[in-house]
Image 1: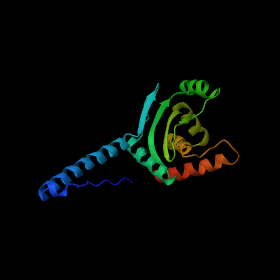
Image 2 (image 1 turned 90 degrees about the horizontal axis):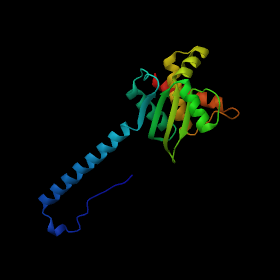
Image 3 (image 1 turned 180 degrees about the vertical axis):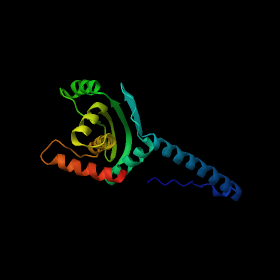
Image 4 (image 1 turned 135 degrees about the vertical axis):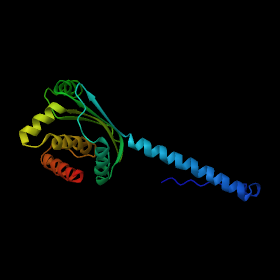
Amino acid sequence: MLVVTPDFSCRDFFSEKSKVACLVWFYEKMITFVGNILYDMEKMIQWTADGVEMPAIDFQRVDAWLGEVARDHSRILGPMTYIFCNDDKIIEVNRQFLNHDYYTDIITFDYTHGRRVSGDMFISLDTVATNAEAVGADYSTELHRVIVHGLLHLCGINDKGPGEREVMERHENDALALLK
């Protein structure tokens, strides 16, 4: 944590009134600075749609939830973008960037640096709906599972190796319990 205190090295030249005025000015500037940081933190997660309608979710609530999940994994939120799309777009992205020729519910591009998670996540709403039906989950729960799945990848949790899928599912379930 950065602690800044004004230096009154020329104490003899400042009257007590001037010192108070200077401190008031300094603290007003610091409050504005901190306020701007907090405002920017609210904007850390961007939500957009490409070729689909934006899903009806409470984005403020989900932003707060994702922040809580990140903190539970000793991470802080950096810039993240969730792009909701259809199956045509997800397979295009999968082919272009990963050389994979199959549909998936989410593709996560990880830009994380240290503890600050950052990335772009493409989510196919078509595949989310298909998966929800296949596992007997409601659409909203499956969508939130996929949303947090992307963040969990940014937190360093994988799901491709032996036993990793079960670890990912446990973290997803723990995160979903926080949302309720």
